[in-house]
Amino acid sequence: MTIIDLIPYEIIENQEYQTESKFLIKNDSFNKIDYKSGTITFSFINCRFSELEIENPDYIDFPSIIIQFINCYIKKINVENISSSNISVFIGSSIFQGQFKSSRLKDVTINNCLLVDSVFLMNQNSINITYTEENIFPKPWKTLIKSINTSFEKLLEYNQSYFIYDSKNITFNVSENKNEKSGLYKRLYSPVQDNKIGYYLKTEEKRKLLINLSIQYSPNIDHLMTKIINARLSSLSLMGFANGELILESSKIDCWYINNFSTQNGANFYNVKPFRGSDTETKMEINKSNLDKVWFDNIAFNDYSIISFYRIKFGQTRITSCEFPETYKGFDKLKTVENIHYPDKLDENYYKTRYETFLQLKKLLESSGNFYESQKLQAVSNEALRKISNLPFWDRLILKINSLSNNHGLSIKEPFFGTLILCAIFYILYLWSLGRMFNKNGIDFDLIGYYFTFLDFTHRSDFLVSKSELSGLSVTIDYINKIIVGFLIYQFIAAFRKYGKK
Image (cartoon, rainbow, N blue to C red; front, side, top):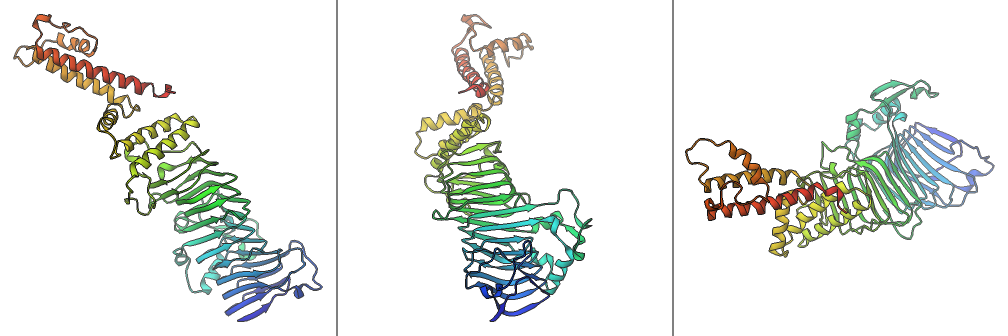
């Protein structure tokens, strides 16, 4: 191992460290060194490291120490043994992997980096992971990529995975180009020669950049704030008890997992939908979590190909302006399975759990005044109830009839057309029983007008012929028609008044 004593305010450029290296940041190095505000303490530019360890064995009485890596390749970095609380690490426009385990680090900032595997950040005070499209400079990137004998396309094949554990302040932010341009462009103002030409990522390149973010909380850690803003993620995983605030806003996430999660100060999820919905299966799983004080606002549930809610406590959950499926078939994507990766593995209480989950969602939507979506959930919960194996036959029959007659109180189409069609059929049978139909006589157009009288289920039995001409069959047909029409009219009125129900 090569031990390297760092000298404050010295810039190291274009160096290659082929063996395992250790940076020692010692108090002795800062003797007679004046603090320079706004100046990077240790700066590495265009350097390549095989394995790198950063160690700070003793406390350093210095206002701020910043270690910066720009356009570097670090095959593996390890930052663990840190004694001072004034040390920050910045890695920008670099290719690396590794771990940061010291709780004494002041801040870890990662900007516009590509990972060859994973980065683990544990017990950190402050984490900032950013992707800023305005700061992509092709010339330094081309030099860096060429120096490690790879290509940009090859680097995009790696999953960019960030694993964050028990950290206090977490920020993940993506700043995209505001216009529709892509490719190379000339920057108007740039003091650095290599940065005069910028690059806007193409849409396909953005879709190939698979970023995974996993955040885990522990109840004994004082989390302060987690902010995920404008993210473009292949997957997001949230686990544990967060006693700080969590904000997820204006993000596109293909696979979203919330497992064994709860929050003390609240979580706001706003404007979230899939990123690559047309190209890959998108998933959302909320499993064994307490969603009390969680606000789902403008979430595109309908855009995910499969969603699972399993053993959830909603409490004071708020759901507003969210998109749910429009049809029963669409609600098939909403599962209540323990593992979303095995959606066909149903437990014996699957439909009962599904029924109760939908009822809870319905109540939440009603409490926010969203009666349109809540009634859809009432309907699909009834469909789940109908499939419970130990439900009595007559209850199952009632649910089936309600489903066919007015879609559990949601649709006026079924009872309206059902009334016209069934009444027409019974009217034809009624006329046939009286010998007024299929008797080889000419067409009596007056009978068409009498159809509307027959449609009135309060009509007299002798509205068309005298009682002496009625047969037992004709009276029976007429009576059955009155029952069916009366029922369908009631179902029509019930569905028509669905927005007036309390």
